[in-house]
Image (tube, rainbow, N blue to C red; front, side):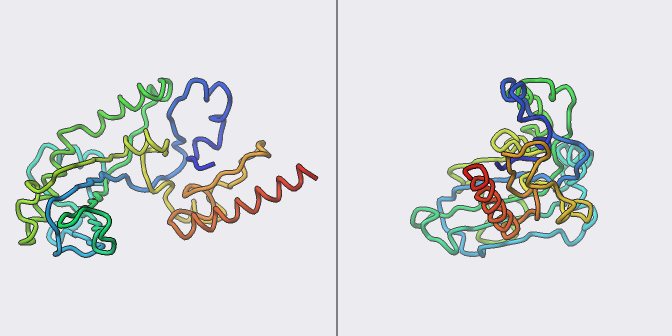
Length: 248
């Protein structure tokens, strides 16, 4: 089962499943959140590679302040734009990712995670998610998008890029919470400092639940595709072993 640390507790009880709530444990440290823009473009963007990183060079310290709540809210109402972000162009390696003479890119902007609301913890999940949407307002998303487009316009082929966006999907920590039930809304799960690394990370075998195993970025050995796949193999072997013991 892939889930986040809050669900190592009592969240699998019949009472919780019946009420379907969304909450997470504050005792854990989480990776940063992400605002993701998925754009379908009606022209090719040959100036971009598969992986592209846009870093602020003048206001370096300020550029990372977007990971702090007060700074993100401030930026949503100001005209400055010191942010770092990543752009992935799938069609550079896989032409089937978009129609001929078109393109598709994903822009990831690091941001704060959701701020836990104790009131939301007591609400049905649909109501909680609706309330958490207030932490990432349309105004904030619009402003972040404008900063990204302005930075991209430094490349000649990306000037007036917005006019070529024919379809857009935007994901925020709220989206990831709603779709995947991830704690604090971060798609990258628990952070990987020494206090949550390897054996200090939550176990794949929750206490007092012998027939349940967890797998994913928030369990051992850690996050990132290679470690998650290693964890999946370990859990698969444990599951097989448990089944053999049950079946005799």
